[in-house]
Length: 328
Image 1 (spheres, one colour):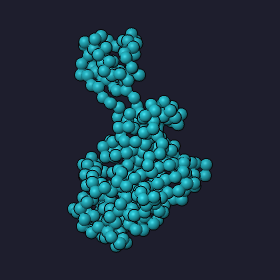
Image 2 (cartoon, one colour; image 1 turned 180 degrees about the vertical axis):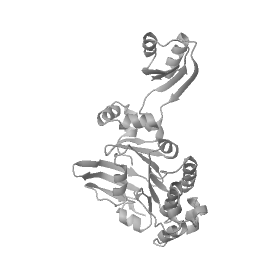
Image 3 (cartoon, one colour; image 1 turned 120 degrees about the vertical axis):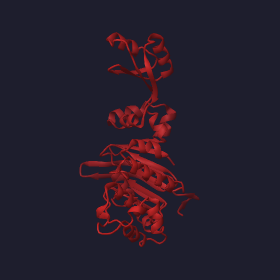
Image 4 (cartoon, helix red, strand yellow; image 1 turned 60 degrees about the vertical axis):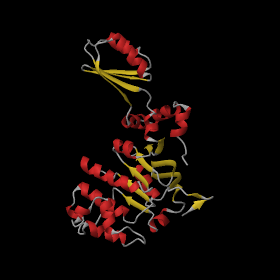
């Protein structure tokens, strides 16, 4: 175990990490520390720099500036000792081998691997163990790649879009096996486009845009960047400009919208807004009051650099200290 001053080193430590390709800056000065035992989702739109960051963390790409360490040493050293498993978008298995043979091949390269059978069971691959890789469906291929990633019995598992090509049932099965894996205190970092996965399975979310980290916190903290709650209700009155102006006068209202006979009001004081609304309109019904979703936070934080800076600098002091800045 690598230690510094008697404290276990971070599973991942990225310091001033940047990567440029000609005039394009893919990753722009990232500082990020992920501690052993954390389950972290890496979110961001296409081109945000997620995959490039993962490649540099694994030593598959050389940073233009900055450094990446795994467990206090070089990525190569951590990988050679079997402490790191990875499931990347560009990873491929030999098409003529069976799933079990593919897992056995990787197991043979490590000193203290799981048994092939255990890796297959953890990845829910026992029923496809004898199938050739070339015959696997997209979802089955992802499960096979997961078995290959965990057979070294790693302390850190890095997954890039792990449930791509999986249907709903396959995604549920995958995350069931992942929960069993993380229950043992393993560190997992996964990049995903499925915001509901990040919300449901991650302890911490790191959101990227334009090569930078724009939010870092628990799912609840990240969603709290978008203030207010959403009031949705059906109405029987005739919509008019006067009605819309009246709704904008409700306490804390930030926006008003309507589609057909359903109105949506976003308010920073939803309780008072709803009481006032009901006192003026007793003909509204089917009322719902909901918090903002991860989708809302994602859009607010990644829409544009200008909007993003505005969002972050106007956050409350407590929230800003939680979401933005170094986490150790």
